[in-house]
Length: 190
Image (tube, rainbow, N blue to C red; front, side, top):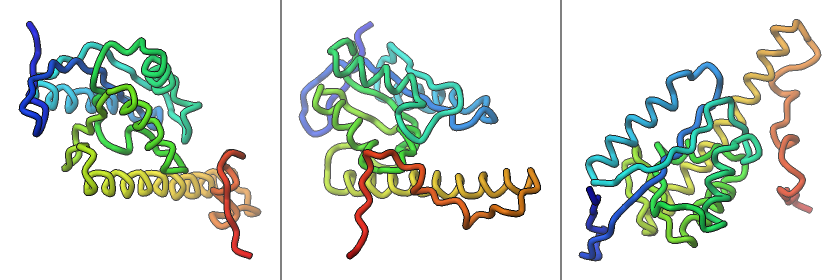
């Protein structure tokens, strides 16, 4: 059965075939990808979108695309023209990646847009429609996701130190910016 959807505002009927991307942050979130997939499936059904492929990072993910094999494969499929779908369904902005550099998530979204593949955030309260509001909300949410990761890294590091009984390190000893890749530039005032 062909799945059809009226594209917002255009009045034109377009068939939507989708891939979904789900990501788990830690090995302790054993049901995380299933819960994301359930919400994505509900979103797709309401909009008559057929999900034809799943990209799943089921293991502990990273703060860069380097630790997300499925996201890497998705981007490779999009860039090579092998993607046979026209929308990628993601649970929310943070599931796309909690990158320290908020522009990294935007960059991967732009790669999809350039290939005419829409990115839809299924659990968000806004449509990813390219409007100024949607663009601003995504930017804030990307920055918040990266900040959450940085703060959590500090807490985890401090907890590991306490667990090991290492009194020489504390939360203030861990500098998250030290973990930034060399390609990330840090501008310091003169």
